[in-house]
Image 1 (spheres, rainbow, N blue to C red):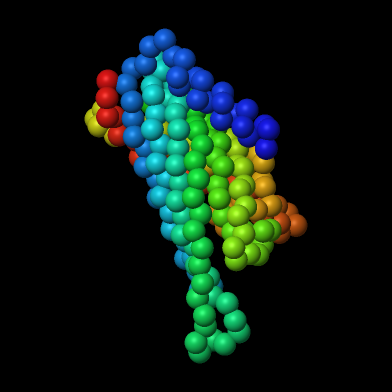
Image 2 (image 1 turned 30 degrees about the vertical axis):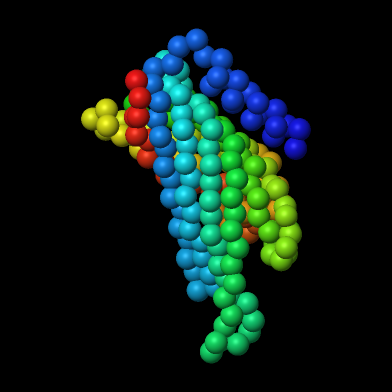
Length: 188
């Protein structure tokens, strides 16, 4: 937890102590996952200050709604769900209008306790996503980021665990997720 708070402080100090910024951007991200047992959808928002040509950093916020079926009666299953929300910060470096590398730290509130939903529970789960991918600006009006991230903390109560998609040779899920972001310039 101390490591998470340290990363958040560094991200905010980078954005607030900058001598000169070259504009701001609003980043939007959507997530969607559905199976025959349930699913989730969510939205993430990032507000970033551009530092020079290559760096952007700032705060982020996230909301996610998940649902799943409980019970063994297939004729009339009971559906239940939960909400996840939280915030954090991010820093991305962009190269050659084709690539980016970045870190995203968030503290997310959810009712998860391991693989179980605990009603009335108040768990906070930190995440530290490290990764990169494709990044391209289109007509100086918007930017697309397609990235793959590794959750360096992989907290047992993390709601991001529902988004893991890679498995190792033993079949265990790896803390790897993908993210698609759209960034729009909002100030120079």
